[in-house]
Structures are given as structure tokens and as C-alpha cells.
Image 1: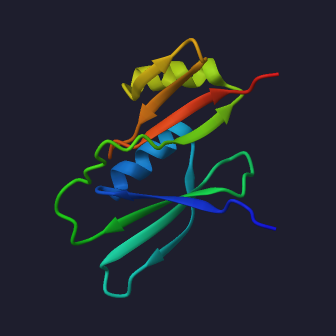
Image 2: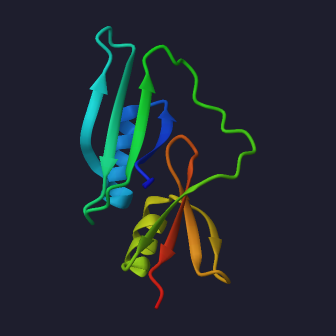
Length: 123
């Protein structure tokens, strides 16, 4: 058996990213790894819905420029039963970067430019 475990985003400003994910999606640290020499820090975020899946944020001390995500079109998706509430919150935060009303979804972007799709629970 194979099961999803986590997905990684490299982040330029770890504290800014932690604040964003807490405010936007209520993701909080569940564990972390720190290099003995301080060269990196990895923080795993979990949701409050009891999912086993985690978002891994990796910060590298010697990174001196933001990441260039290029033209990649990958994204991470979250499904929610509070779609309208989250949409209003994300609009207020200025985080909504793309809306697709025809498909009934929208995207937010994090401080590093990663796209996150918000999908409503559908019956």
C-alpha cells in the first residue's frame, strides 16, 4: 500500500510563510527538523481536519534571493466545506490570484508565489 504523506515548498521567509498558512488555511506546525549548524529548517504543517497529509516548508539559511518558480503550473489543492467564508477571507487578505467561476474554484498564492487551489465540497 502507498499513501500520500507530504509535499514540499521551499520558502524564502519562513516566518512570513508560517503566518500566511495559519491565517489563510489554519495550517499549524506539527513537527520540525533543524540542521545542527543552522543551515536549514524544515517545518511540517498539518490541518485541523485530521488529515494525514502535511505541507513541508523548507527554509535554507544561505538562500539570499526569492525562489523563481518559472512557468510551472503545479499547485496544491484544498477542499473545504466553508468555501464562501474562505473566499471572503482570502479576498480580504489580497491572496486571491485567479478565479474560475465556471469550474467553481479559485486560487490563492502564498508569499513565495506558490498557487493553492480552493475547491468546495460538492455533493
